[in-house]
Image 1 (cartoon, helix red, strand yellow):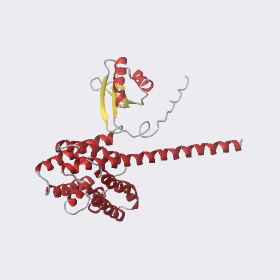
Image 2 (cartoon, one colour):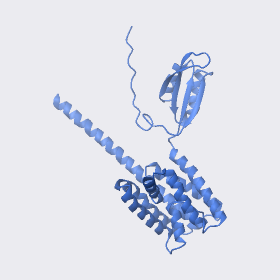
Image 3 (cartoon, one colour):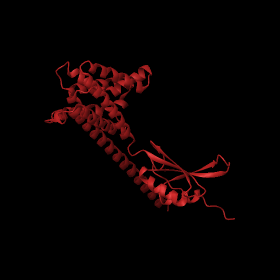
Image 4 (tube, helix red, strand yellow):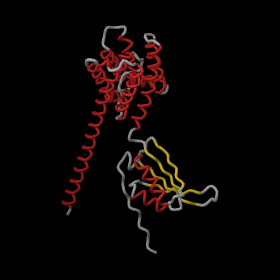
Length: 315
């Protein structure tokens, strides 16, 4: 019996170990795919829309655009040198662990940019600078969002911003604005008013799209229901919507009556079904709907665990 139990324990351990290894392998594959796709898209956007239109932009690419006007080197080569310099600075100030997490994009992006610049006709996709700013900003936002969603960065001035934060203790966001203002100001010396305005449009579009990509698939809908039929609504949410619920003890403001509210978090695609379900149970139910940017915990960022309620003692 003891041998059998030992064999079962070993088998369970091997299964758990295999599951964890498979999970790590899947996560590593997803991370590599996102970093590769993001840098390829970023290189294409810069080569196809930003450099040909002359729109100003921040980051290492902005520095590369400025220096390319002064020295006879491709923008991709200059960006690579900037990224390598930033990596060396990050290694000295922020440590080896940070550099290892950033090195992939720091090397990939200049390679992707250089490859994209060699595609015939890449700079003639559009002659409209406003359209180029809109498309370039949107694609850059998607590209950077893909990379940042997996915990990486595109290197370059991101490293400089973190170093400034460590040395001066200013917020990272302030360091980002500071470096971008300096870089875009330097580009403004070589640009006309339209190129500056298109650069502002590009930055706004990039910021909006980046925010959407970062929250893609993570935003949820929170429902809060106040109804005398709270028990039936709770049961239907659990069984028909397959959504967890939390019961909240409340007190009505006018009559001071004790009551229970049903709190439920669902994906946006289930909102219509949830509204119809609540209305079918109680047409007069008080319902609030709130959009939540991100939800963490069981059933969302970790696997849901079902626990049976304790049995009530017989009277």
